Image (tube, rainbow, N blue to C red; front, side):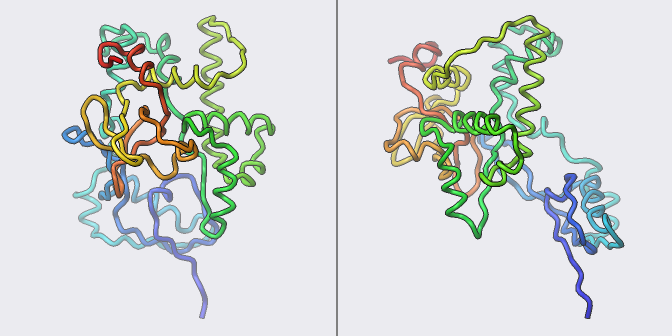
Length: 300
């Protein structure tokens, strides 16, 4: 009796990923998607029906390198008339409050008509790197030990920066990334963005400066960009947002667990709801920084 490779696709199958030998695809018609709820202020990972475009992408995984068949666990009528033609754009399911306030803080009066090129640098510089670590089930201890080598205990942001600097020091080597359990695709994207920023600096005739890294200066800069996401310690690794008093937890994968103590104040890039409400990309900050950088909201 012959054997055949079958695939139960998720969102990953809708990318350019190609797996050799897949001859059967079973499409459930559902996928996970990050959706922002403006009523609760939370971003949740929800299971939702996919679009026709996503369905076609999943079907194309079968037979990429040979004959194959796709089985859809929903009716043709659902495909033709019930599901969306294309996925909902991320801009329509993302919290844009941060972007709007950031643009206003940059003295942009008309948000619908402004010179994007001039202000692009200021905005992109505040965007953190995507997660670059991966953890193998059969090599968990080895994966965790490799990650510990990059940790900057005060900050997830600085940990990501340290990863990039180490990758650069190793000549951007893909094999080095695999040995260190790092996602080379995320690092390549970061390198691409860095190249774009350097081009923008050159176009705007902004001189580049070189100095020894001062982690406290960088943390203070991160604080100034994320003061609206400042949180105060409430319990053991439990925090509340300083402004709206929403409770959040520090994610178990955060670098801050290596500090040896629990910081009283932190800032975070975003929150996400999984089993709990977690803060993502967190940096420990000093309370007087908040009062200095955002005196209209904080005082010592």
